[in-house]
Amino acid sequence: MKLIGILGGMSWESTALYYRVINETVKARLGKLHSARLLLHSVDFQEIERLQHAGDWNATAVILGEAARGLKDGGADFLLIATNTMHKVADEITTASGLEILHIADPTGAALVRNGIKCVALLGTRFTMEQEFYRTRLVTKFGLEVMVPDRNEREEIHRIIYEELCQGIVRAESAALFTNIIMNMKARGAQAVILGCTEITMIVNSADCPVPAYDTTTLHAQAAVDKAIGET
Image (cartoon, rainbow, N blue to C red):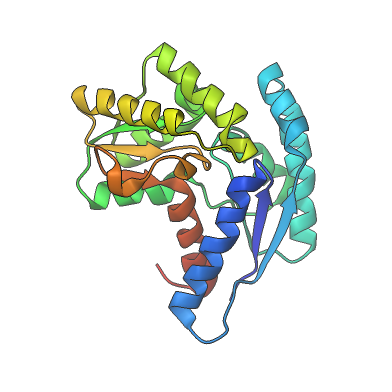
């Protein structure tokens, strides 16, 4: 089994989900007492969040690149960035560490294509929804039409992620707001929704979602196990 390197702590709430899903998937695939071989570097999210909102992405890349080099020195065979937003600096982290990154958008894009989805709504931080680093990958690599909510809805999603979900707070009124936004996106033609922030799975119940929901956290974690144990 390959050694998985994880850059986590952004937030620790979602990193805990990664640890659980990866180990549950290894157990399901291999049975008995098997668990994942992994190394985790968990950063202080307060500093990363400050730099994100200051627009200093170069500084975030330096912090995460140094952490990734440590994972490589520890023997990691490949790397997960356990957050959608920080894939904005994925190339810089690869250059700094020399580790291959399993990009979080790829397992979700592949699943959407397999299921015949052509038009998908993307929910995430304002950075993920509004900037090109994430949407462009889904469009160019997987041929998807990617829609995002309107400006006011994007602001509310962003606020809920940072002020509530990243702090372990799940409010019923916020869950209802997410449902209404997804309903609006469905009315605009979205066939499915990408839960494009690793915390959103805490508040959107896939079973009750108005359209099929693709949880990037779970899909990313499962793809890491596929790579670690040699399955495709």
